[in-house]
Image 1: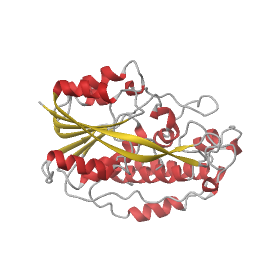
Image 2 (image 1 turned 135 degrees about the vertical axis):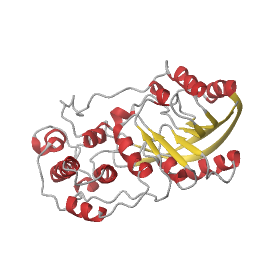
Image 3 (image 1 turned 45 degrees about the vertical axis):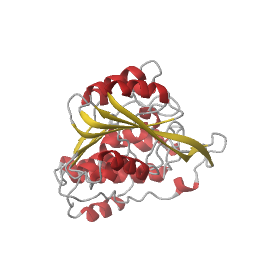
Length: 333
């Protein structure tokens, strides 16, 4: 997925740093990805540690992590269910009614056929769950597969804060569900959908990885339509973009972020803490250092890399943007 703040390109940098600090053998350790997003970092460590704890406040993120982290054993006949979903007849449901132009909604997040296909697939998955045709593991596998596949044909520049006036080339392509494959192993893992500052008081482990929002952009607003597909509940979409109600994060608010962050570090029962942040964040590197240094031995490593951002004037173009990634390190005492 084209996801804001994704650590896909930085996963090797993060893993190398963790190994240098903690050691090469992590096989008996508990690793927590507290702001998991699409779960890229947790996925990277899943095969290397005893247990991964993944958490995110957004439901679409919970679905993705429930599959990629929570699922660890084979799912029999998953290809059969995927094929049946891809052969679903079109249905004019909630997504088509509120987020496709043909329904008269005035919104064009998906082409009409793709919106109807999303409705048909989402309804079928829910029917299978209700009838106990599928297990919970299969349910989240299929739902994660739908979310990722729908995102590939979304008519947006990158996020769901706005849709494009005309259908772009990828949005015209027919939706096809591709399986959200996950790593198999013998260990059980834990996945949560909670406020991070509350969950940190209930868990403990060895390595805590933090990747909170950097700026004022709220993920609940930027990815509201993924939550709507995941939840498939009924509400009255608001405004031109069809926004749903969402919970705002303290980490996206300048007057709250430092207090929330210090509270998190204070309550963390983990020996090693790694924080990904960058030079465009609401907290400066010095502010982060001052907070973390109060709780143990602090260190910092940085990496320059090219980040791509959407161009507002030409929604289908992308500009390269140089940014500096900070990986703050705390060995807690």
